[in-house]
Image (cartoon, rainbow, N blue to C red; front, side, top):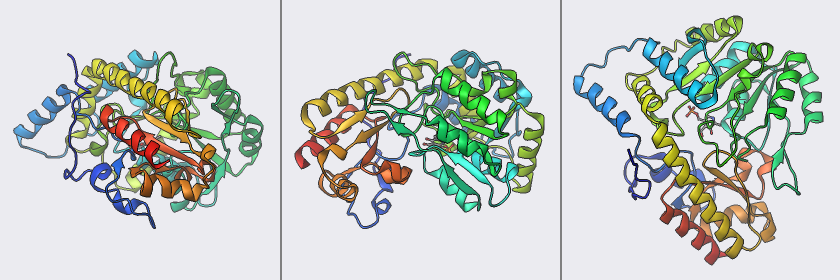
Length: 394
Ligand SMILES: Cc1ncc(COP(=O)(O)O)c(C=O)c1O
């Protein structure tokens, strides 16, 4: 089936956070009239099979408690992860959870005590730090380093080892592919991370929500399939929500191969009285994973062509601006430091002058100062207009 990622869909006035909820997100800045290219959902309709599954359920008209974890849910996850990444999951490892940020939170609550350390690699998806701190744990940072020669971010392993060695560090939240810098971590990186965490007794939460969205010839490797010892030390999080635009349904599959860790995680769900997914989430995940491969490919091709378009445009027209070329995700990290503006000026420039609502770099940590994150899961005309407005404002 061919999908149409060239169809412009007007989402204004649909109670969308991205389109209708951005004006208050930039305190002190006037975001009225901005083009919304922030928060990570897409401007595209989901696969028809997902719509059909939801309509069928809606027309059935009974929305009683769904079974928490059926065989069809497990099979959809198992088949998708095997097809995509060659990793054979066991059904008992899979725990459906309503969202990955909630899953990170339950894992932190289950596996650490107040005051204990949770390691992240900024600039990184900001809800990680929020949930660490809301839960009174300590954020341990292993900042990524931007390599001037390759133009890519990498891991400072010396610093990482030093921080993992601290007996207070209990969990490492890995983001792979990494939001916002777009890295798809290599097998060498993953092996080193896996081994270091085993050596120092730090459990890894590997957030692989963007793993279907790996660009060009990059390859995603699940950390948990590395080797049997590492496998026992990793919690992996998958969800169709980014690829298939299902974030509002909150369907994710958390993979917990280690029996003891799984027991503690499930106990935490009980403590919070969290009961599985809502009546539409599981069926949407199943339809996306069972029938969505063609959609995924066409969506990815659209994202790639948006990235190519922007790389060319920025190179030709936006002096002092540089794109960190993403290896994965539809989120694109722009370096504005070469414009000579300060971080405050860049934030004010993009919102008030260029009138493009993006994620401000410092939301992801101080390392993000001078950077901006753009969401490229949009119609080409939106991207083109945003780039033109930036050019004119510069
Ligand atoms: C790395 C990462 N993890 C998790 C999420 C959100 O997950 P959920 O909506 O399932 O809580 C996002 C959304 O952008 C993300 O980029």
